[in-house]
Image (tube, rainbow, N blue to C red; front, side, top):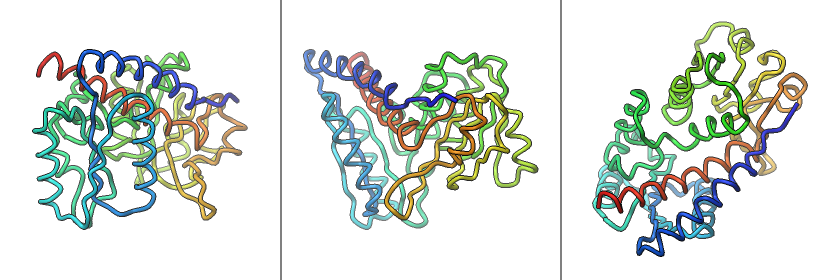
Length: 282
């Protein structure tokens, strides 16, 4: 079994980001994005600090916009304000959101041209139509890792476990756009393990620690573990039982060190692309 090294892939992407950011700055444009944080969740705060640190290291400006106990209207107003700000090229609305507020409804108030993490339904629709867009970065990280493994996705059987609009559905659409034959599974899928065993490429994005065991995996299959489940000792584990699946899979992403670093690197790449787009269409 071969580990798929997400950190190495992320390093390559970030090198390209740094070079592009330097060129933009030389041309008078500071690539800038805003992260709207409507929660005081400590896990979210850690993640946002990590994004900001990564961005600044590569020459991007990251503005963290903390909203204290906001309602739906306050979140929407801030997203609209940032969408209208010509100095902000990209916008992320961080989750979790306050009770009763969904990303689907507030994400629609992010300009599609600044929606660097695929929160606006317009961009999800463009993805479904096979048009150029920014997919959710985590879903795109799945495809980025697969492509860098030089796998033949055309005609391959892919199974995605999870149907969220953040990972499962967009990952399935990205795989379809590569001409894979895709099955999307969820909590009501009958005989889930048997369906998963048919996959040449298995994507686990269900949010349950260790749910995917060896009996879910076709021998030699490539397994992408999107899960990030906190442990009692402060660590992270994926949706895949790593030790068990490593005995069966041909390739497998570790947690941490797999999808996560690539997701952050792709967010930064999206900011660069948005800034370049603003130079072309101010």
